[in-house]
Image (tube, rainbow, N blue to C red; front, top):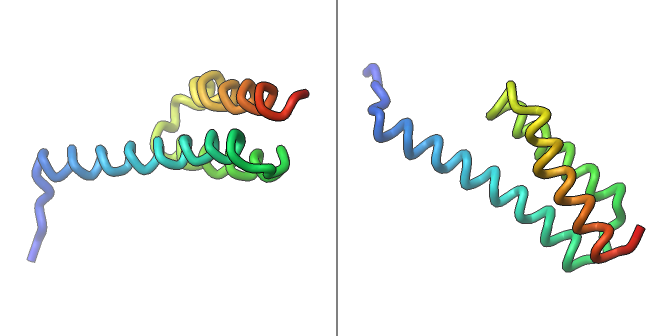
Length: 82
């Protein structure tokens, strides 16, 4: 049987992927704010998110660095000092 994905199925799948990505991003922010995890461990999580971003948005690497990495650095400085 050949399954044809409808446009609605595609939108739902893409929405789930984006929701999962945003959840991963939010989890990193929560780690920074609510835990004593070292910056090295945060960087490991950022690398995982970066790889997922490159998979989902291969042409947007610079945007990831500007938005997410800079956010995480600001949060780290705010909650843990320099």
